[in-house]
Image (cartoon, rainbow, N blue to C red; front, side, top):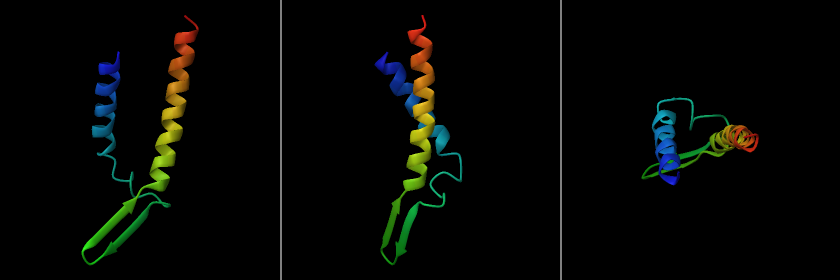
Length: 66
């Protein structure tokens, strides 16, 4: 079961990297200076947290009903 979850998460990370707007949302902090690139994806993290919470709740409710 853990292997399946890790495989699915790996696949999701590969798919997420193909969406150009993730990581560049308003609210993401980017500092670009000479010799320094710093990126904090605040808004992207919040969005992914909300989406994953909804998905996990749906899955849990599906398995509890059985």
